[in-house]
Amino acid sequence: MADMTAHPQAGERAERTRNVPVLVPAADIYETEDALFLSLEMPGVSPDAVNIMLDQRVLTISGCSRVSVPEGYSLTHHEYREGNCERAFTLSLAIDSDKIEAELKEGVLRLKLPRSQPAPAKTINVKTAE
Amino acid sequence: MVRYSPGTDLWGEPLSALQRIQEEINRAFGDQRWSPPAEFPPINIWRGLEGIIVTAEIPGVSLDAVDLAVHQNTLTIKGRREPEAREPEAGFHRRERVFGPFSRTIPLPFNVDPEQVKATAQNGILTVELPRPESDKPRKIKISQS
Image (tube, rainbow over all chains, first blue to last red; front, top):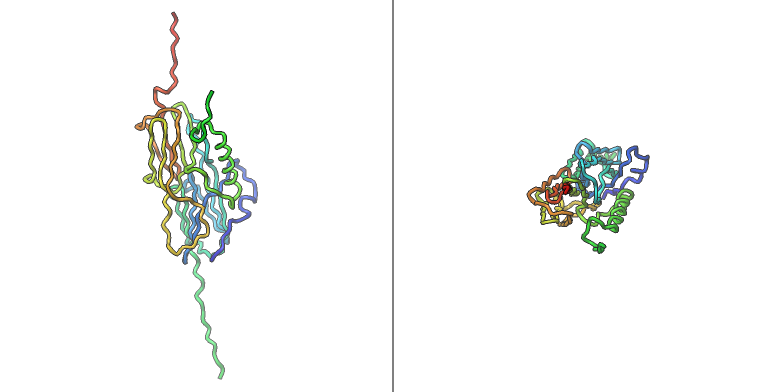
């Protein structure tokens, strides 16, 4: 079973230049025999504003939602914020980075990270000296 | 004098505002302490001269699964968040997303003509435009000289 924890340093490395909140998107993560699946809730983020990066074992997903202010309107009741979202995970599975699939639909980003195939096991015959 | 009525009035509810701030702080800081918002979907309300715009975060919900109803001065958003299909032998690492039915009723400061309401959804954000009826708009009153 592969262990997975949120990357502790993510978001703490440096201060952001833009003064917008950085949200942590809710995630479902599960693994099957041949791949790791992630789904993250990123409402308000358009597909071209998503960045997915796999650097060695750290998978970083970030996206920014454009703050939309309807013209002539002012916010009177406020329950959610629009802003950037970012989350990073340290993977302990070996992932085939060329075969990662990503899809953003209805504000949910779905990622499929196929495991990299291990080199086939080799059997070595031992000769017996007679 | 206005009597305080807890619960239903969105137009002046100081405690819930504090609760939202708390939730937001939690969401912004700790990935370990992530907790789903108390009410789903979270909404923002915009008010202008022409009416009201309600936006709601509904990630993973298709428009077919959302039921919008306007009755006099209330807007009801109902729907269902369907869990994703996955392979039966899948092992979970994290399960933070919430699924199931949801319903929210939003009181509006005026009566709305249901025919005039427009709703769109993009990237998991539902936008409902509720125009203000002509009878509710402010009118300039001429003062006649006698």
